[in-house]
Image 1 (spheres, one colour):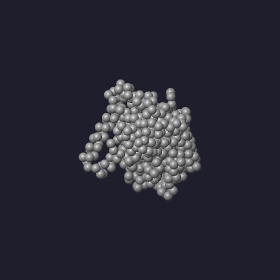
Image 2 (cartoon, helix red, strand yellow; image 1 turned 90 degrees about the vertical axis):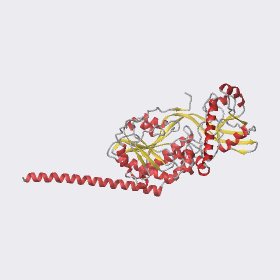
Image 3 (cartoon, helix red, strand yellow; image 1 turned 45 degrees about the vertical axis):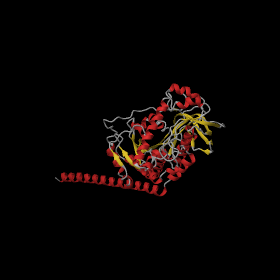
Image 4 (spheres, one colour; image 1 turned 120 degrees about the horizontal axis):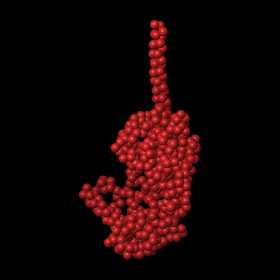
Length: 518
């Protein structure tokens, strides 16, 4: 009897001790988590490096068009920053690209009066060397069909050809909405819609597209192509790539383009003096910049931070995607300082050639199946300077369990602004998380508040340092660091079961030879 009582007592004592141990462990983890989170918040609040990093990258290095010396310099800069923070980093080559470097541009109207024009040569526009052209403007006419256009085409010889429509207004719609009568707004929009449709039809009737038309014009003797891609805001244009092979293509700001168009249309075509410089650099390597904090317990499982590093080069790529880049760099700095020995390996991917089709992240997915297979989670930011307000489950059924668990550690001042959506939708391809989702690896977009991103900074000539809202970016750096910390610490591996009844993106092979003849 005594032995039986002793056994019962011993058994109950073990259970009690085990339960107490679990409570202690849970309490210790909670205290440890809180101390790490508090340290991250305090450091970023009192010692943020974001303004300094932004100055060095945006003002010093500048825009980061794939294949340019500036992109290469940016990669070296990031690797050096990481090494200074004690973080292993490298540039990882994955292909080659057309090497090109932007030079100076001078665009002046010299008749009927003198005025320097606001304009930007498009990316990969052919250089003019020391040559300057002086020529009158001519507008693509509204002709019957492609046969009529071919008969007209010799008229472009020696001319600067205007290939964009005349916008009826340079005021953004929200300005009209604030000040105009409703019927006036409606009339303006109706006229603009009709003008846009008519211009598109005019271009179609040439027998060419906006991609092939510039080549036809230069082959017919045009000395340059002038366009305007207005971004529906005051003084802002989108700057993309040239399609000409021999003569320059320049975007002229709406205000100046409209003036040139009206003068030309009225029978008094202005005379323009144009000089642009650029360098062709042949075939150059293209790369991702990868940094790593090695895991201590599960080094072969991975948490990733993600942001594309490249940009268009009309501005300096400050909010697309410089702010995403700096968010992840700052998060890695915070993690290294306060969580130097993570359970799982924490990686950051700064991708190249996102702007041309997610090529850098697609190449990484192809080249690193061992990481993709063992990915706990990836967090990608790529829509401007605003604080994060959206986090969805990306179509993974179990995301509803682990994402809220990780978010629970985030300070209420940050997480209360974030709207979650489960199971959510897989990314259709808008940014680099889609490269991972396409192969069933959990890539999540942390979506930011708009801050007039699509009109004023996305791919525009105004995407510069002064558009950064540093308090919002600091908010995002803290969030990214805490989510990475919690994902690394989670005792459970994510299962990544796809929700049914949803169309998932298909894997797309990376373009590893860009802008070059096959």
